[in-house]
Image (cartoon, rainbow, N blue to C red; front, side):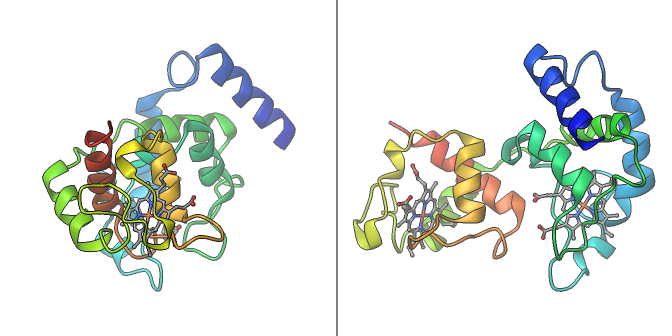
Length: 191
Ligand code: HEC
Ligand code: HEC
């Protein structure tokens, strides 16, 4: 079954059909309201209940479009996140329903605030990276204005850190919208 799921997924990604012909966003929205809104909120910005989950609150899903590649999103929904309040939905939702709800999640919108991202960067990141994004050479932090990374790759480095370096994971420390703001800012300073 699992093999089949990934086969179908690969096919949909390759043909570019993912998100268009096969998934049904309005069905996804219905599923989202039924199963996900309790924690993530109707608009994905996290419900009061979701915020209260200890020690790891539910995450804002409006940023998923920037942070999570389509295939990764399906995997998270299907199998959940180890040790967190996010269970896997494979026993509740059919693969087609997972495609639909993922597609709906990708329609949620967060508009990053670049100005807020700049301030956040100066306050939280400039210890190692220069305030303008240049490398301070402290702990070998690189020039971020020269970074070749796009949003999703940058989000990965910021959220999950880099093994064996001083770039520790920031996903636990900050909320997704703050990270979306700082990543949007970093995308604007690229040379
Ligand atoms: C009981 C509460 C709860 C329900 C219901 C729930 N989630 Fe979650 N979800 C969480 C928590 C808590 C996390 C944070 C996991 C972590 O800390 O990495 C999360 C994380 C996620 C993430 C990863 C977000 C990120 O930025 O890393 C996605 C995607 C997601 N949920 C989608 C869904 C979908 C789709 C549904 C419905 C099918 C759903 N969730 C239902 C609690 C819930
Ligand atoms: C303690 C020092 C330190 C802090 C604080 C820090 N970083 Fe880093 N960062 C690093 C180092 C060192 C690397 C290089 C990792 C490597 O060698 O792959 C890095 C790499 C990165 C990269 C990957 C760049 C690329 O092109 O590969 C991004 C993006 C990034 N940091 C963003 C941030 C953001 C955003 C913050 C603030 C939320 C932050 N960093 C805070 C030290 C730091």
